[in-house]
Amino acid sequence: MSEPTAAEEAVPTAVEVVHGCPVTSSRGQRVLHPGRERLVEVVRALYRDGFEVCVDLTGVDYLGAPARELPVGVAPERFEVVVNLLSISRGERVRLRTQVPESDPVVPSLFDVHPGTEAHERETFDMFGISFDGHPDMTRILMPEDWVGHPLRKDYDEGRIPVQFKGANA
Image (cartoon, rainbow, N blue to C red; front, side):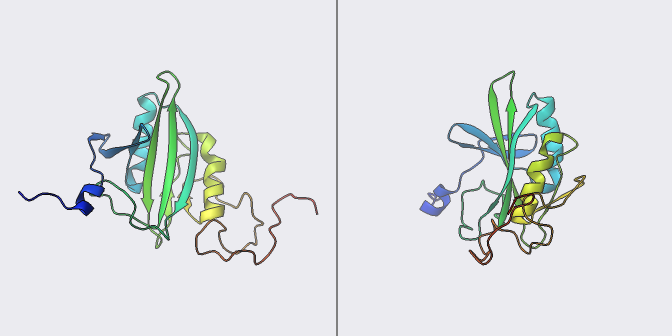
């Protein structure tokens, strides 16, 4: 067997698998990499394991950094949905990173498992254009309803029009 190349050594390998997802580590925290079709299933399983709080859910646009570190077998996509869960009883956090293709930026909603994600999912939709299938109110939350585009996408034009957030007084 030949020695791995520097490029092969740079790709993290999953040292464990949890609920069928490869697991890596980042800054001492476990990171699960579920496919979007299994996201809700994995979050439900983690809930049963004691991760009862969804602390955060957001999107990331990797337009300028497509060659990021992912475990072997996980194909990088332009977008990623990142979910941070907390187990209060164990004092432990776990992060989930789900790849989302630019051609179909849709993932299932976590609302049925964690109702507190309602606003997080709307904000991710508003800023990145990632939709959450099964969300009870998939509408903009920060930008006006008639706003065109998604301001946190890396290819969004900067400074065209001053932003007037919803409900802001002139």
